[in-house]
Amino acid sequence: MPTFPQLNGSLFYDPNFESDKIYWIDLGAKRWITNEDTFKGVFGQGASVYKEEEDLSQIDAGPDVEPGSILVRGGSDAKIYLVSQGVARWIPTEELRFQNHLEGNVHSVPPTLIEMYPAGPAFAR
Image (cartoon, rainbow, N blue to C red; front, side, top):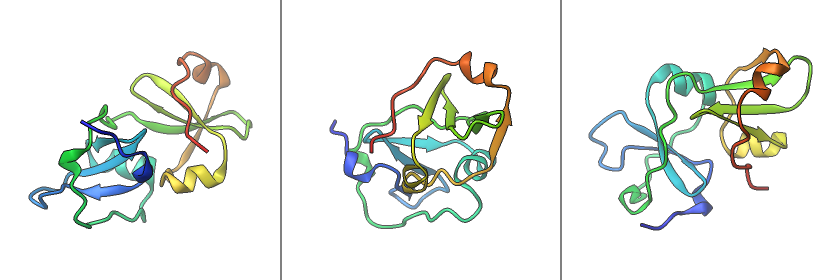
């Protein structure tokens, strides 16, 4: 199945509108956000979720945005990372952060904690 990188960062409800499932398009694939706490923690309270008639069935499924996914920074370092699926993905600009709707709370953690995670794929500029 194809990927749709032009939709990266978009949030969509279940394409059949039969459930409360929300998907985030990341690296051209749809990723199910598994619960409300994860949604609020990563994407924030006021994230816009689209109900447009996108045919998400045509988009490859990526890994879920599972519980425990979190936005972090190492101590006072300005770099922000999305930690999800066992990897830390650096978000190089505020513009990319907002384009990807990554507007949840950023937690300050010891830098050594971030270093424990392998680097995940980059967010495209």
